[in-house]
Image 1 (cartoon, helix red, strand yellow):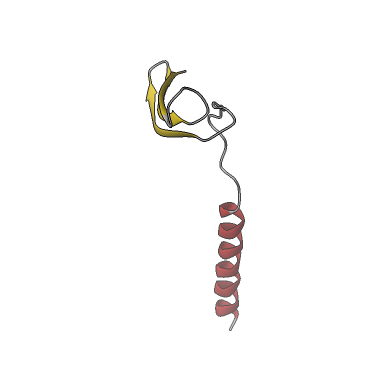
Image 2 (image 1 turned 90 degrees about the horizontal axis):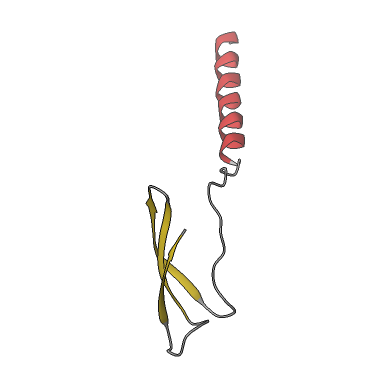
Length: 73
């Protein structure tokens, strides 16, 4: 009886700890906003030795329906 109570308490404790740990938001590593007033999409983000290269399309700027862009950070 006592052994089963201890095992049950351990299982409940592990479930509570796992649930609370899973609800913690991950630490943000990188955040930067690019774009304009319309739709802008990043289709590829590659990390380089000195930053990032981002490629995508925009409907905010240019003369066409969608224009491609590449950003080096």
